[in-house]
Length: 302
Ligand code: DGJ
Image 1: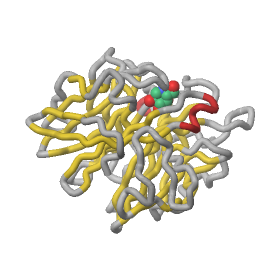
Image 2: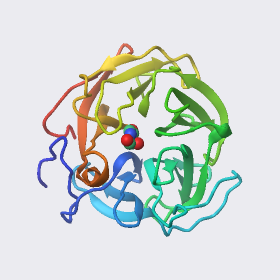
Image 3: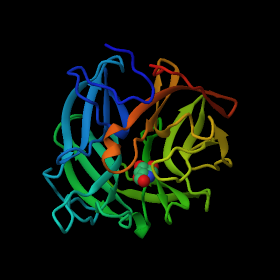
């Protein structure tokens, strides 16, 4: 295994590039599953797994333009290709395991592949972590725009979907239904007019922290964080973290491993063909007394 350099596009154990951008990780039965955007060919979301976070095995293209589609009780639009037959965009896919239904439920940001006006949430599910996910379509929660997003699962299993609304001006927090297949309440409209993207949530030492970026397309910007005593409680104002480019990254997710917090970020190559050169960063994150500190390292802090 070669050293994983921050900012580089890493390779899996077969020496193929890992395309799991804007993603998330889930620990299940001793494996870390890494899900993320894969914009190659007819793929949308790909899944890799690892025991040590360093050696990655490609598992499956879990969502593609040809994925099986099935409506669910949410009234959604079932289409994985746009009117011209081109690909749509599924960005920032996040997956949670629902212990009650025993299903892996995926939420993502949906766009029509041409512009960012659809601003919708997409839903998919599967009975195994790396099987072929069934696509349940996209919708606008309570009619709202929904762009950059994340999921957070609380200790009691209650899950939240957090997404940028009103052309990214506000960040909405939705509590999910107990099967994670719909929103159940809009519990917050945070930081109105602050234009926060790329949300990532972690609970550490009994405190909830949310990390976000500003809104500058593919270019990195100053990250900010806030804290709260509970997801539905009062969130603090925003505090800067890292430097003015968040050490050349944009948040993807935060992983807790062996008592440490690992910040996973994307170092985007840019739009068009440059997107495919996008790499990954893992920086150590420290949480103490409602303060979050991010440190820059050359190697991934795995
Ligand atoms: C910033 C978002 O965080 C990304 O997921 C992507 O949508 C780019 N904007 C597109 O410009």
